[in-house]
Length: 116
Image 1 (cartoon, helix red, strand yellow):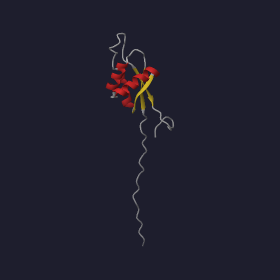
Image 2 (cartoon, one colour; image 1 turned 60 degrees about the vertical axis):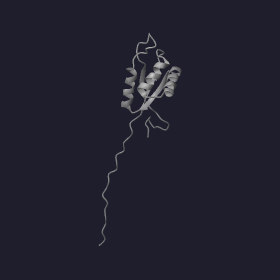
Image 3 (cartoon, one colour; image 1 turned 120 degrees about the vertical axis):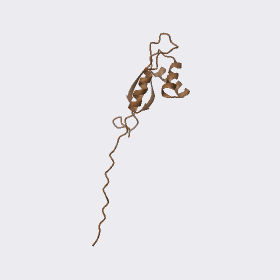
Image 4 (tube, one colour; image 1 turned 180 degrees about the vertical axis):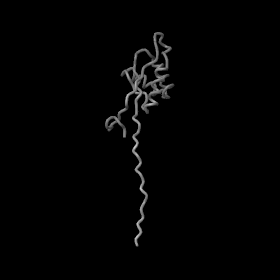
C-alpha cells in the first residue's frame, strides 16, 4: 500500500497596497520673507538650512514647491502646521501664515497615479 502525504494548504496572503503618497505643496503669496520660509521649513519639516533655502527660492520663483511627500495623515498634519505657523514678524503688514495644499504624488510608471 502506497501512502500519500498531503501538505496543509496555506492561504495566499492578501495583497495590501501601499497607501498613496501625498505632497505637501507650499504656495507663494509675496507676503513672507525668505527668513520666514527658511525658519518654517526647519521647524515644521526638519529640513536643513540648505534645503530650506532651496525651498524658499523655488516657491518665490515658481509660486509653489513640494515640501514633503508622505502618507496622507502625516501630510494633513504638516499642512495644518504650515497654516498655524503664524504671521511673518519681519513684515508689519503680514496678516498670517502661508498656505499649503495637498496633492496626490505621482511617480514615473504609475498607473492611475498609484505607486507599486
